[in-house]
Image 1 (spheres, rainbow, N blue to C red):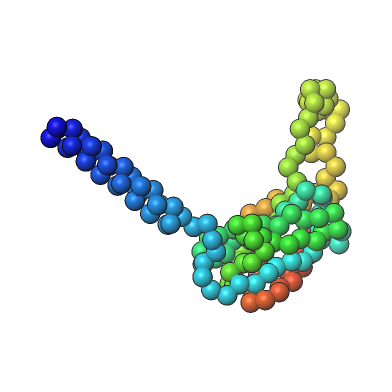
Image 2: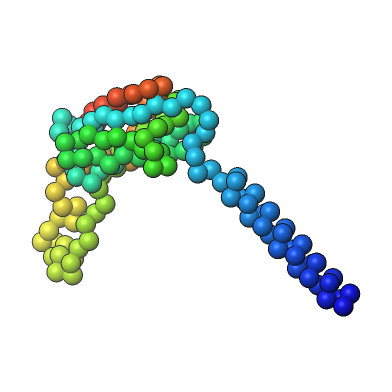
Length: 158
C-alpha cells in the first residue's frame, strides 16, 4: 500500500507542477498591448496621386516594443491601423511600410503564355507600388503616434 501511495503522490505532484508551468506560461504571453497611453491611426495612402491597387496594406512597427500594426488599404486609399485586433496603438515612433496586393494565381494557360513571351508576367504595373516601400528599412516612412486620434496620410511616389 505504501508503494501505491508513493506513486499517486508523485503523479499528483507532477500534474500540479505541469498545471503551474502551464498557467505561468499562459500568464506570460503577450496577448495585450503594453501599459501606457494609446492612440488610434487612420489615413489615406496614395501612389502618384491615386489610390494604390486593391488589396494593398500598410504595416507599422513600434520602434520600442517591436509590435506590429496593420491596416488594409481600401479602394479609395483609406486605412485604419490595428494592433492585435484592436484599434488602439501604443504611442511612440513607428517605422512604416506599404505593400501591394499578393500576385494572383495563374492558370496553366496563363503560365504557358507568359513563358512563350505572349504576356507580361508582372501584369498591369501602371499602379504597382515600388518595392522600396515594402521594407521599413528602405521605405523612408516613419510616424509618431500621439495619444488620441491620429491621421497619417501617406503620399507615395516613384
